[in-house]
Length: 345
Picture 1 (tube, rainbow, N blue to C red):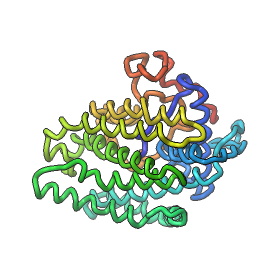
Picture 2 (picture 1 turned 180 degrees about the vertical axis):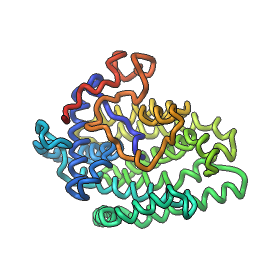
Picture 3 (picture 1 turned 60 degrees about the horizontal axis):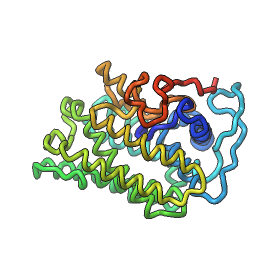
Picture 4 (picture 1 turned 90 degrees about the vertical axis):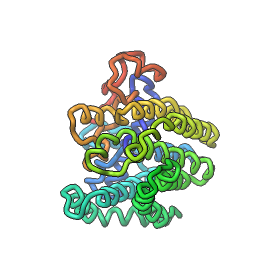
């Protein structure tokens, strides 16, 4: 789900941004320490959300470490890089990459360059991914069951083509199940609410990703439910609204011990804004939409990581310059999307 969940910017909410940045850069260090230096480039907003959520559900607050992140010559600051929550987020990041590589290999022909590239990357990363899977299994996460469920996606789509009709609930089932498990195992409490939230998030990701990818899938011949049944797009706003309400309600009911404001911000107004942007045909973030405007591939495999050091400054995830996109985020117009709060260098 890389890039689906947004981050608060320094101009909009300096306190929340500071908390978020401490988890983002802490996760970067955790990835490097647990899985090797190159893995730090996999740090992303969605895994940072898992780290935040896991720490918010713990009775004891995570103890920050005074250290640097990307630049060893930079000024040390307090980073949340120790504890089960951030280790879980790091392991999920590696396993998420494995799932994405598997999906790309399955989507392309045997000797297609992209498929061969992803297959090679999967082999190179086999050792760190195996360590991540071992960690998750030790925590009780059903790695095998999730992998088997995701592997059924092509058969579900083939059946939809054979029958000539689509059911978004069935098609999004593997993704919904997987994200339900991801959130259910982030902590030791409120597992049912977390699983329900994760399932709704998974359905949103599958559905809106298909909305955004309609043109690309039509050109490449990939399966897309909205190409198979174009009128299905009319049902998306209602389905999206239902899942957004489920997520917001579950978030309010979580027994959080800290970070409630920032988590409700990410799962509330920010998530709604991202969903509305995707429903209108735009990608989940400014970087993706700029690629789309240049006519390039909006989802290359090397774009799965989040290159924004400290995730500086995107509050609305939009190309805003004081326009309507900022409404509801407290951006105050042209203060939106500035990167002035990043001090990694």
